[in-house]
Length: 353
Image 1 (cartoon, one colour):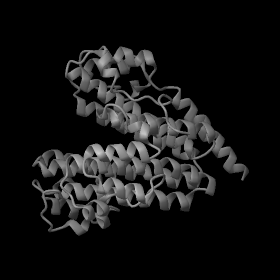
Image 2: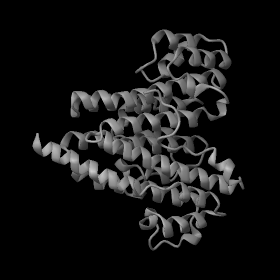
Image 3: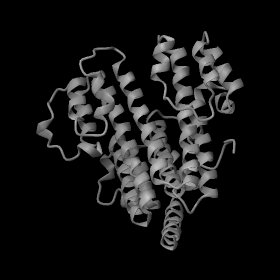
Image 4: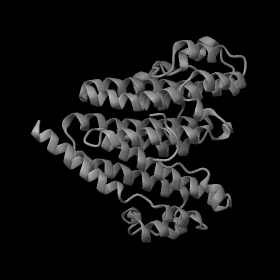
């Protein structure tokens, strides 16, 4: 017990120190007024903790994709540096971050394959943690969805995807993504209950349960706006885990006759109505703000727990996404005030406590 308390204290202190290196409001203002990707990289190198990322790199030739990969790898390295400070349960749970990153890359890979960008898909495959050891020549130059699934045979993801082998369907990548989401959901719940204390598991599942609810609501809205799916197909595709959503509300949304009606039900019948109000173009941003605030609140209440590294990883991912959003805004010539509207900040907004 004493050693666990000491571990938690050391982990909390380490996370607190690393959080202190986050970009400041002045840093964001400066970066938003840069003119190019190399300018952004140069500022980050000379003025922020990201200097270690670009050390020895000729930033003048950096493009957006390279910068994003370098920032993500830096986060992975920082997460690994936190591992020695974690107790065994926290460490096992935080290993899920590797799976989460791999699933995100697998989704990108599937989308690239679907549009015929084999080179880009193969590039992504080599960045997935479970496939990094494969020799490049063992992967065909041109791969199909079936080839792609076959390459995952000795990874945790094959079980979720092998049922799609030999099934030509124009919406196949979509169904495969939903299968990966379902696998991820089950892994989070199983790992929280297996490796964390009862109080930590409850706190963590509040975070991820809210995330699952938002994912389902976003999917249901996409169904009403974009996809021509039967009710049975929708039920088969949603994440089979509700946190603060009732089955009755989900049924009402599924059976609603239009996007507008579905949105109205979400606003009136769910605890997440505020995130789905006003201009629906910014629903994703409001969802991210909501999650930032929820995690900041959980971190404030439980700093000496698994919430500490979870919050750190989320904060860093948010910061990296903000940097990428800024770069995209610069590429399209948007003024800084316009770019600022797309950024997400932890500790601001309105998550219901």
